[in-house]
Length: 360
Image (cartoon, rainbow, N blue to C red):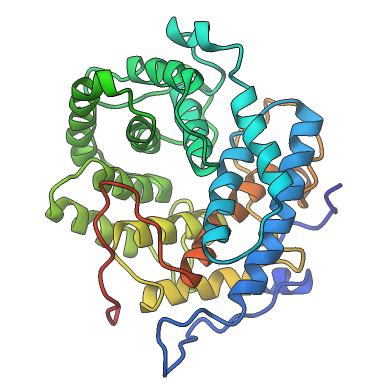
């Protein structure tokens, strides 16, 4: 079960609990694109812990957690691409969990009866299935039908009366971006023209959206790339996200919070996937240095919970007590960012090619 620790608020506390102080300015003068020497070890530790926690969370709850399986599936996908071995048994079990939760929900989906979490969770879990390598089938078809019908007239996807749970379900921008990507990943060929029109409406909405949190800024950037927005809109979104980077190299959830792994990992992944920065760029190396210097010895990062506690608490094999679920999601984001620093980002269809390194 997860170990009990105090709630660290800075790097000194993290180092006391086993974090190593990373060299935020690390760069190999002979090979600027060479991975940070700590990256492989840090990623391997995180993946082992995430796999264990994913299995324990499902064992304890009997359900897929929006902060566990979908996030961890994407982290595993990127770790494999970076050369980190992942247990085939663990990945098969996780895929079975992601798919099995909806095996009996197809009729409900076709009637637009959304599961808990609304369209945001629906899209998140579909992206988890995509990362786990699941091909389209009747289950994903019915889920996509439901997701498409949940789009608002203005082009966005909203959670309606669902309880906001920052930072995972903090705003409409992330939900809209995820829905777009899910429609692309599990499109229904006979409805391609309709889906293209829905994505175009989402693009217009994202171009006009006003981000407030780092999650908004990062997911707006990815949403603009996924919808094929004009280059000028994407460049502005990239610059605005880069401008939020702190002196310590990290990103925070909003201007009133300290830098942490969830926001830093998410921002780095968005910047890498958009083609704004490469792993050799100064901004990415600074963000990577923040992550490597605040990781705990067991491979975790601590992210303070700020969501309303409305679900029963239980241990999920991850540290930090009542902060463990969001810390698992933050660790998955951080692991993705580290994996992208080891190998080139895989760019799904519709993405721009990454730009060459610059002196940012």
